[in-house]
Image (cartoon, rainbow, N blue to C red):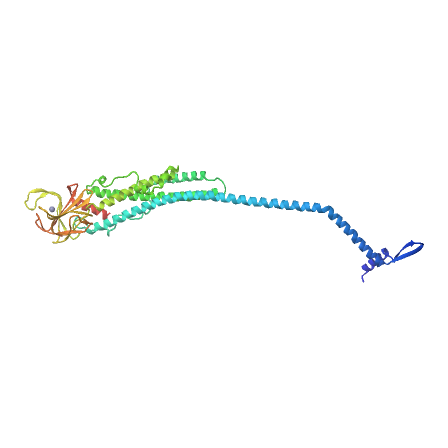
Length: 438
Ligand SMILES: [Zn+2]
């Protein structure tokens, strides 16, 4: 046993030393003896009772206040929570509003871009189809060669390519376009929200859209230059043959491509300078493509080939000459080619057989109507292989070379009549060479 607990025991036994409680009743004195242990037990019970009373009193007094405090805490928590919820909701609303703004801007921008893209695509496809037609014509004409059967020296390179290739528009026009695009960005940016995430997103989208716009303008410029160059070239082919271009092509104010597209005209009403510039330019380009298409179509019916594909000799020219039979000077309304007997004589362009039979002087003769005022005549045939009203294509056989009619030897007499007036076929065949030898 330690000294400390020994001391505690001595203190306890001093405080709770054995006591007697005396009391008198009816003259008799009684006493109750209380041991230390009994006193300690009583003291503990008493102390516990006092503590319990104290606790109960405090509890009763402060319970109300505790409840109030708890309620206040929970109210504060509730308020904080709902405030946070509200903040979150607002943040969400802000984000979805921004989202809406960005989406709307994006949709409008995409609509513009895709409308322009669609128009460009239509024009590129339209031009590609024209070029394919020209390629086919060039190959066909190359087959017959020049007036004396000369074949192209450049490996039958076709005159046109289908894709617009590298853009090479004029520098001045290019910088004007760039300025327009930049001004449009400024306007678009000014119209969009000025701050925050949406603003940045829309600004970078506007920048990307302006880059695309520039690309589209460049493509348009390249397409226009190509279409115009080809159109001018084909016009030269016609002019060199002596045919006025206006008789074949009527320039339109609004291109068929644009009319077919329809949509852009809605866009023109909007105050969008860049968009207007595009469609204005597009209309000009589409018109050039339209004219090119009209020329290409017209050229299919212009007799640009030679009536003989086989080896031949150019024996007599167009105009006044000494007549081989009577020796007098007379007008020769066509040109003559000599070739082996019964060589195939072929149509010099697409058309419909107008006459197939015998005519005085011409012997067995075929006449083909090509439309647009053009008629070709093939004379002195040995045999005719087509009937009146029959459709013929370029280089379809129409008969065999012979010596019928007023002729001094096997040859073909070939004429081109334009609105009934004879033109020099040699010029047409030379012009045909331009188509495949450019
Ligand atoms: Zn002749």
